[in-house]
Image (cartoon, rainbow over all chains, first blue to last red; front, side, top):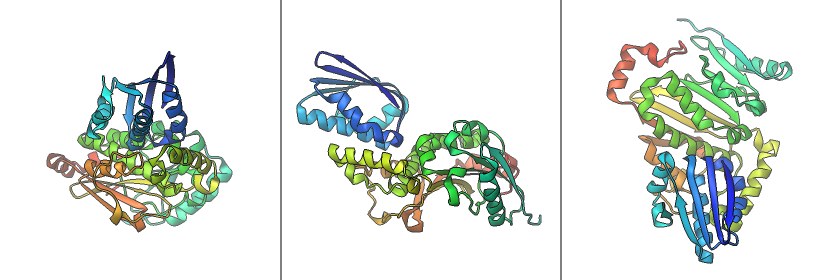
Length: 99
Length: 254
């Protein structure tokens, strides 16, 4: 998995690409910081994610927890295919606004 | 057919000094097979071409980076793969394994997606919780996740953990394909494993994905091995029975 961060005022957009799996777990703390710190709104673009496993899903739980703790608005955008199915199956629609 | 001593080694980047003792041990441990086994031995540190190498009729692929654990008694199987923990963490092992099986056995196309989801979780568990000995409960909080991530990186760089093998085996069974994954960790008490999806960063959800993706799941060897059954459609089984070679492209009788 690779990611890019775009900051625009107090809005942070994080674009994830590739496969988000247990192999990426060592990068999660930095990713969470990059995606949430100092933002009022966090938007995560997963349209270029091709696969996600349960460890990858746990990343979004952490981002949700961070956003909840600091009152940030959270949007998850562009999920398709296996990623969309996994997020739906795990009831992430209850946590995130999907676009 | 009588039993023959036969291991044909296909070397993929392992130097002679590393290959010779491994070949000797493999032959000693696998002296009694009905037909020759073609075993790909590869260097896990440069294994990007593994998927391509597996397009050849290989019975088993072994990462020489597993050190003393690289040689083992090979099971009768559709495909066997043994890699070190660090290689399992770096390569998309589940995808390589399922893609290889699907290319060899188009009959299992209907299982591929479920098998991919389940195998990904099983390999992740074998790496993180099995061989690296990391408890997912640490991931319940962000601070715990920081510790978990740092410990994971540290252990992946530590030869004591990094060389431990993860083994994946696919076997044809009555009614379907069994895929088992085994690690060399401490095992776990699977009677306490959660069976329902948990909306928690602490984990547990992987096992529910496995349970939801397979037709049957069982544990053995103190929780170090998980076996997952994927039933083939009845029509596929009949086809395979009538034309057994379609399910045995490596010419090995199962």
